[in-house]
Image 1: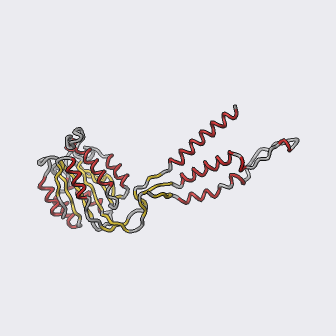
Image 2: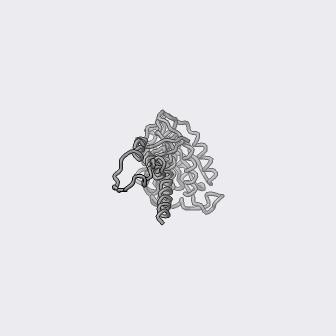
Length: 302
């Protein structure tokens, strides 16, 4: 875990701190017959300017966007452009896929295991395509694994319609991969149904993937006969991938572990991976100090 500032130039504002002690302020004029009645106090010995300095410093630190991150690098890293293409049609709402929790739907279990898989792919540029009657990109290619998992969990069954457009799903995945720069590109297609919708046939979509050198790994979810096993095997074989079958959650988890061993390729990473902003910490301290200061001031007047 590393620490840094997202906007370090705001720290230059700290150079104004001496003004809290030495810059002249406009003040009202009071006349006293004797100067001995006035106590001379140094600003360094009073509490108020120090409180102001602390508040100002904390607010500047918040502006500078403090953050922690797992790794920082501007060098080339190993990984691949990878798309998770997940079936969200109506049949994914069926329960019983997870033996540990029979009330979970196939889609909920798939999302959970997919999120675990994503968290282990630190070096990959990953995106998500969700499909049903039509296909759409739920997340473009990104290294921000936390944001990717969040967007993935925002999806739900039926969001893309009740049917299963496998051809459109592959075409949309290819389009999303077109924005990546990795040499090796792959699609992981998860479905529990038969192709029965969409404008593009699976044959046409797979041929385009083959022409572009994109491997497709297919995973059939549920019992045999629930999905088009022959079609999934054909898609994987023609594209140079592999076809899997997951009758229950444990099998899907094992499949993800095997896919996790895919050989990576060289791609360029972002500066900060899995970053988490800490802006709320200095701001919270500011609010606490302000509250105590106001409370103290009111009690002093009583």
